[in-house]
Image (tube, rainbow, N blue to C red; front, side):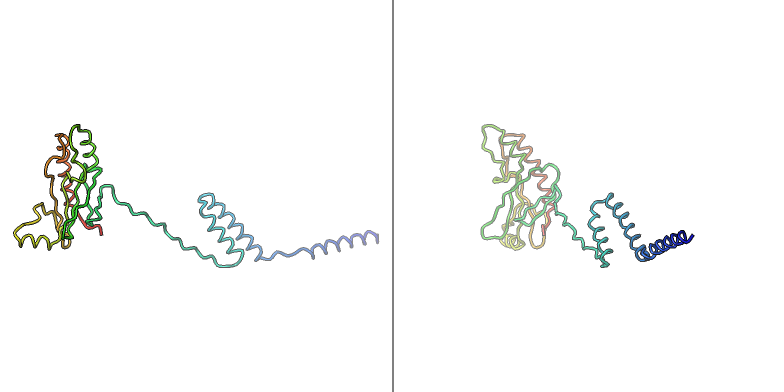
Length: 222
């Protein structure tokens, strides 16, 4: 009887000792564990939907663990390249921007300067006109930009026009399209056919009329 009692007493002592050695989990620890679990769930959710969120969420987890504030990084927007519409044609030498009608694909020009003047002009052609003329046999090809078969657009200072009127020369003799700032935008049409081919010259005249329409849309580039 005494031996059994002694054994029971030893068992109680071991159990009691085990309870004493067991650490009590504080409410704060439970709270941190819960937050961590929620973060893991949210991280998994957002990562599966959008992998780009992984870095952001990782930094947020580090912030919670280290007890430091999380600061959202400033996102620098990627600049959008500036592109001009396909029907916008620039003539930087004249500081002019034209809106082209259909039918002037492959438009090209050569700049013309005037002696003793700041006035400038550009003579025009198109690659389609050049190519069509290049197939005409036994002819001298005048449909290139050097010859300005579609005519020319000029930018002429007000002073040049005033002086010509005062001198009775009425320069320029070409068509005054519009006035921009203190300059006149003018257009002068073809002086004659650029090819021995009627078909080529018909295309030249058609495109020349389109170029005059484009000249009417002229504005400053800047």
